[in-house]
Length: 347
Image: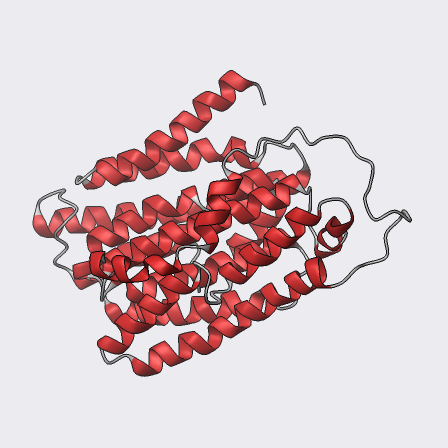
């Protein structure tokens, strides 16, 4: 893709999300979603192949359905209240309709089927945008709608997402699919706490984005898309191998890494609101996620697979990939746990 075209497309994606974030009018929120959706399709098809076209088509159909549902909810809300303001939704039907539309956009269960398929069909860099930036706009609208949402519906979707996010990733060898199921599980954690403490959902989103960006950058740097190719990185990029190990454990929510902080605070928030069974269920299902991250770390850093050459270090050209953001992302993805007292005061 030519740089000027890529610049225009990225500018449209960013503008769409910012429009959603800044709007208090339903029509401009909807327009922001549409701009974002239409601009990301060329990004998904950056490497032109039948698989990428299929992934972009699946993404378009799902997002278009969600946009249609959202617009239906907006129109019904307009008929009932006579205004376009995003903050007050009086009807439970409208609230449920909009929640379902936004959960389709996020890829929450039971509307999660498109996420692994689309992520698997596109390049790593496009997958990185899809699983990080594209989550910001729908979650910001859910944040605004939090007081008027049906908590039973949200908790049901959260439980299903955490469970499917854990189960789905167990048998995978494709790294993009593993990260897609991980994304579904993380969205489940965020949605579970939305009705009780929406600001905590934003903290979880921030840490999730940092960890996922770091993971995708490491995979792009080592050009790995499967567990097999990742298991051979020890031979040429030993430092990257150890960084992947740490960031994977952080994604799984293992203390004393950053990924443990949002899980800890969400469990605390749920128990405070007498949702002890829910907290216990989510903690147990988080072990499923931890299992497949542990499997990846075992394949990557804890075993020495037979290599094609007899030398420990491989002669290779210097990598030309830009890694400016990688060091700060890895530091923030792994070392934020000591800030938990400050975060709990803020959130």
